Amino acid sequence: MAKGIPLLVAGQARLLGSSLEALVAQRAVRTSHGGPELGEALHRAVQSDADVLIYCSPHLSAREVEAFQGVEIPLLLILGEPPEVELAMRALKNGALGLIPPPCSSSELLAALITIKHRRVVVMFSELMEHLLRQPAHDVLTDASALKRLAVLTPRQRQVLALAAQGYPNQRIADEMNLANSTVRNYLSSAYQRLGCQNRTEAAIIFRELAKS
Image (cartoon, rainbow, N blue to C red):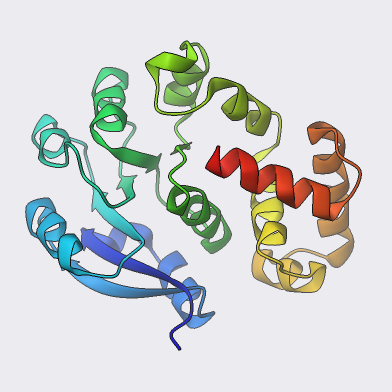
């Protein structure tokens, strides 16, 4: 049986650097090629078994935003430069679930894929994130309270907790993120405190529920 999150990768995949290759090597994901154009990738997505479509673009254009309006497959955009806030908000309302910059580590990419797979928004552009947090809940595609609760975690804490929520033991997380085992324990302990939970299981449940709710 095939393992890993099935992905369809399109556009300028070089923007992903080595992070995607690392996840493939770890069998955390498996990929198929969606072609260089977004329209072609969206057509292929209808017939594929992919859980997430990754589209890589150096610059988000209005044409691209309109092309994926109403897209059914969870869509992650890897963008070479920060998008205009208005255009990014249109992208989210048209169906994109993730907007992140390169380069990202394999653990950052995996954390984003897990969240997007459950149809939750992931944004790693600071200006856009600040804009989203100022919006009323009904104005965006995510629950503002859930987003703010995850926002109390540092990026490293979110990465460690995303892997812990998948069932990774501390040593595997340490190996994946190139950290000491003790550092992983410290990140998890700090995440527990910030989320107001008592242990690893409760933190993982909260993380998964916030990713899905």
